[in-house]
Amino acid sequence: MAAAAAAAASPEEGPAVVALEVVYCGVCGMPTEYCEYGSTIDRCEAWRKANCPTEGGAAAAAASGAGDADDEEGGAEADEEADAKAEAEASEAAAAGATGKGAKKKVGEAKVVIQSKQVKGRKKWLTMVVGVELFDVKLKDLKKSLSSKFAASASITENAKGTKMVQVGGEVAEEAALFIVQEYGIPATRVFVLQGKKAVSAAKLEV
Amino acid sequence: MAAEPAEAVETTSIALFKKYSLDDIATMTKLKSSTQRAIKRNVADEFPLLEPIVDDLLPKGDTQEAKGKGRVSFVVVRKTPIVFRQQHGPLFPTLRVLHAYPTMMQRVQVDKGAIKFILKGADVMCPGLTSAGGWLPEEDLPEHTAVAVYAEGKEHALAVGQLAMSVSEIRSATKGIGIRIIHYLNDGLWRIGDEFEL
Image 1: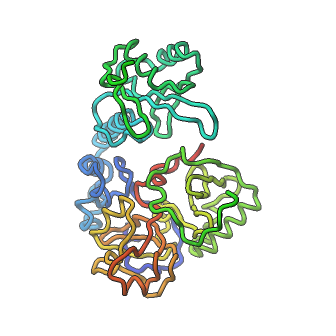
Image 2 (image 1 turned 180 degrees about the vertical axis):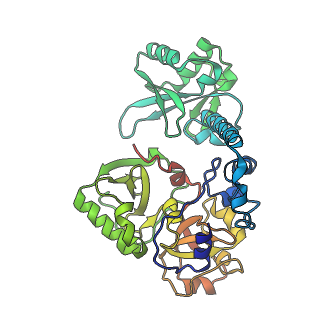
Image 3 (image 1 turned 90 degrees about the horizontal axis):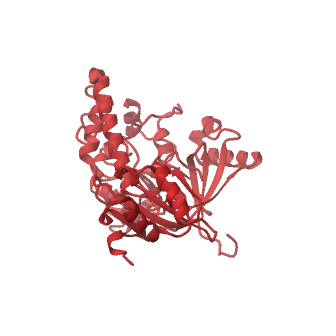
């Protein structure tokens, strides 16, 4: 990182064009020095300690560069642990927020999120169900039963973040919510339908 | 696309990518090789520093163009957006590219207090640039220049934006918007990261 520091000192530095590697935080995704401005600072800090002790984080921003080579012994164990933890958290977070919209909701409680949305530019709707696996429902089973319930095709897909979900044809978010509550015994208070930006609990949907 | 009056060089939307996701991308097309060459030339002209490596940055055959909400077009290479522009606005690198080649753009620096606002998508106010922690180039850059925004005590850029007034005007102004932020850390475009595909 010394190169970058030099560049920072003199912006018009020479012509050597080498891609600089920046360490991005595994939790918030920003360069580690900006973690302190995120909302997950504690987890960021833990991640940083486990993964790249040499990297200056929020607290160590000023001290970076002081102790370089010494910290290499962080050990594989700590690494793995942190990875597993980060992964678990990530998947939870992903499950909680369907397409990122629900992401600001509290993480940690299992919930099912259902959302209908229009396929771009066409008169076609898709309904996505996220999070059922947290209630020990097999995605494949749900796919089958939703498919037959709504007489529409259904599939298991992943979004960009790798969150698995069931997609059903048609604008059936509310029906699907009630169906899931009835059929799989998931508490209605834990099933949410996203209507625009609002998440409505299935308990309030009763017809 | 048609029938809209041509816009000035200013990129209009405030915090353009604050909420941006793959859903906002309308089309993604493979470019014919002549267009790819033109883009390469464009990038090399705009960022002379990148000229030696522009072939690696935009490899032949892997360069795609995506268009999305806000009339933005992106140049995407293997799912990674490299540069983007809004209609006739200036060309901006995405932050990851800027982090890799930090000297490619004109830079400005804001003081510590401004960081958290910028990370929420706010524009940079003049005092954030003229205070002790801020830094402006000696040279008087004109309005609408694309700049990389750095922060006091931080090593990497946190945003790219466009000057809302010239550098000399910023120096003399005591308030008002100095830089319009276009793309910042953890905005929608940042979060798409290298998963840019339809």
